[in-house]
Length: 213
Image 1 (cartoon, rainbow, N blue to C red):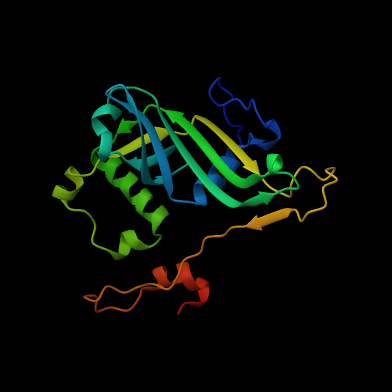
Image 2: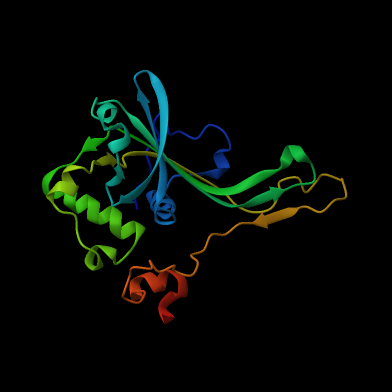
């Protein structure tokens, strides 16, 4: 697997031991979530937009309608994804921290159209809700026209991961120290009162695993 770029924007300067250089580490962070923050400049002011995403081996795809005017200017955008895995509670407050996985991606967004747009929208949908593209009604022409999908290349990216216990084992202060883990899980599906069909298998698997309801 190829290594991540090491540009002036993505080179690890602080906490280098938490840096990751394998491109598969980037994909692991992307697979683990579906919400990113898209950082752009709008009329001279910074804006950070939370939005869902999908990805393939070369691009991350995001909804861009909130600020599509600025995203067509050719300026670089910054996409960040962060997963919090736990609080690191040390013997001293100074050494407290967070176990996390994060990625930062720089690139010039490209607005997609035609088949590229439809393919990217399918990629995004299947990343967020696997199986839903073939289950639900697909977008019609009017809906597609009202949707902006942006492609940002994965050529310039940085990944950092922090795992494990506190780093102050040599601190003589006699208090409890350790990690308070944090996890996120899907809960019971809540059926729309107007729905007449049972929960489909591909949705149930998100909650119950391969054993179904």
